[in-house]
Every structure is written in C-alpha cells, then in structure tokens.
Length: 148
Image (cartoon, rainbow, N blue to C red; front, side, top):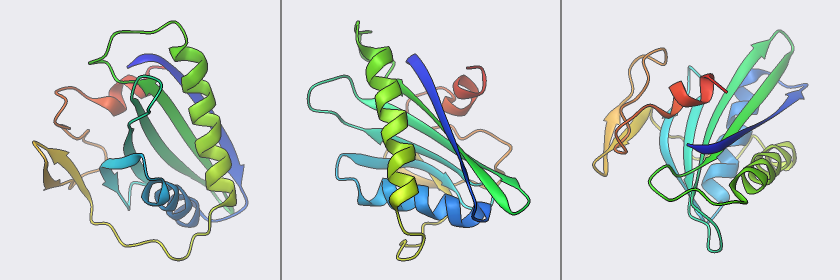
C-alpha cells in the first residue's frame, strides 16, 4: 500500500452495530467494492476506484471495548499503481471520510454478507479471522495495515 493513513473513532454502540455501519457504508458507496469480510472478527477490506486519483484500499477493523467500540480505518493507494505525490493526503482524507460516513450510517438495513474474500473474482470462505485472507492481489492487506 502506498502512503497508508489511519483514522479511528469511538462509538457508543456495541462492536457488531459499529461493524454493521461500516459494512453499510461499503455497500452504499457506488465506487467501493468489498474484497473481504469477516462478520465475527469484524474485519472488512474494501477497494475504491477513484476517478481522479489512484485506487484506494481500506482495511477496516472494529474493536470491542465493553459498551463502546472503536472503528479503525487504514486507507492506502493501490500498490499496483505508481505512487503519487498527493497519495498521503488523499488517503487521510479518504479514511476520515469513511469514519464520518460510518458515524452517520444506520446499522439497520445492511444486506447480510457471508464471511469471504475474493480470489480470482470468486468468493472463498474466510474461516478464521486470525488468518489473513489471500486476496487476489497476492499479498496481505491486513498485515500491511497492522504495521502502520
């Protein structure tokens, strides 16, 4: 990922409701497509094809803190593209925008999505959320995001 940037927010809702909000944002945004989702592990990987900048990858994780939850979003430019001068700024803006959208999203009305990841345009079941998915791009997005 080029120039990964992080944004997080604390919600006063249970972790599963916060994850449902993040999933609702990914489903409702026209330019975004889901690369991987694990409902029980509350992990989500989203690809966003931008018109005027490099495509972005969002790695989303929701942590449970009792009656509250924390939404973590890491945004980075697609590593298959050449790095651009404004990638860092645009990635931070994208991460902040995703968090803001999740704050305003409703947890209801989310279409159920099975635990899966995409591999060569086919859905492969994602069994264990501790094992990183082998998304079709050939390396681990979650591993990259955990080191930022």
